[in-house]
Length: 157
Image 1: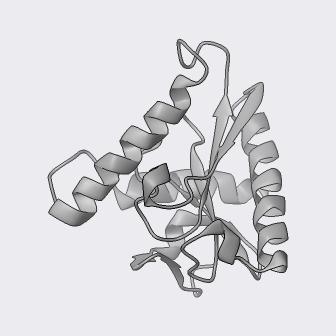
Image 2 (image 1 turned 120 degrees about the vertical axis):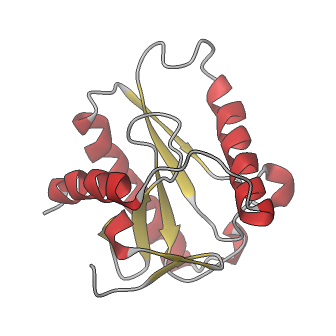
């Protein structure tokens, strides 16, 4: 995977952050995860809106999210998954590239279960501020993200 190139909207993704890929989709670790195992699954082709994906891309994206989610749920000893898409700016999407948030869930990880959606929205807004205003914030280092991706990559070997 390290010889491949990946983009996320206008941003180049270091291949070390990608732990699973197909011909049409890839899964990467998250710069600021909400929970352990919070990753993103995205189509390889830069597509801004979900409705603009081809049927093959849509199918592959969801099959990739299903495969990644099931492995990470086991790895993190979770009991459920949250799969979420923010489709367009008014839905909270800050990077103009379709992506599915995959979050392994455990009982009590949020006081109220639906608070996860507010948290995703808040993290997307923080990311927008970082990307647009370059405000200082505590991002994970490439080494931290590489170590996590290496662990996840082993799940699919």
